[in-house]
Length: 65
View 1 (cartoon, rainbow, N blue to C red):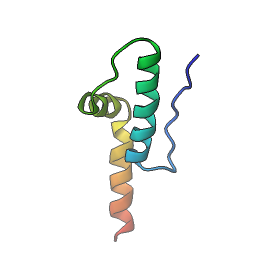
View 2 (view 1 turned 120 degrees about the horizontal axis):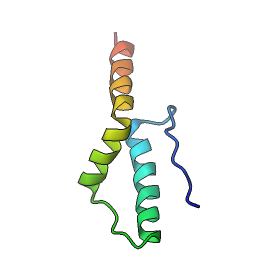
View 3 (view 1 turned 30 degrees about the vertical axis):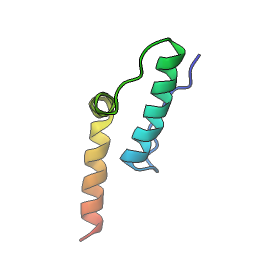
């Protein structure tokens, strides 16, 4: 069974995306599927974890006050 991605709130949204994209691409290759292009992968990741990006942005804005 493949590893399961868990979003790391201590890492950035981009860092989490890179980890997820690497894991997802490996899983797709292991299943003889074509990995997502980066554009498609960003959309899929955003659909699943986009709320984390919004929280990160708001948190950063509040820190800058």
